[in-house]
Length: 84
Image 1 (cartoon, one colour):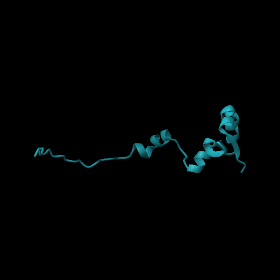
Image 2: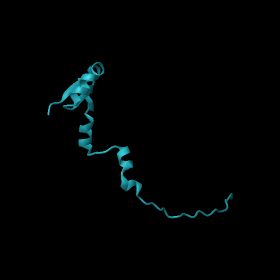
Image 3: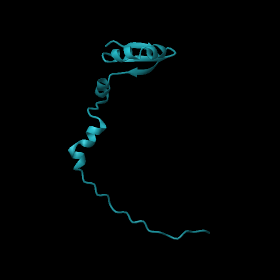
């Protein structure tokens, strides 16, 4: 796998080219010669983090909407304040 490396200045001047390159390979963005950021395609990010769905899809899943949750009741008793 090839890795494209751009300085922050090059990235700022050529963001479109960096995005196109990120569709095929990771793009390293450097600050003062040191790697600072990595630009990836969203598909590659999902593959690396093993995320296959977004939050809207997860919330729309039937098992989430059919989930029953009955928290136990908590009794809080008031007590007199001690001002001594």
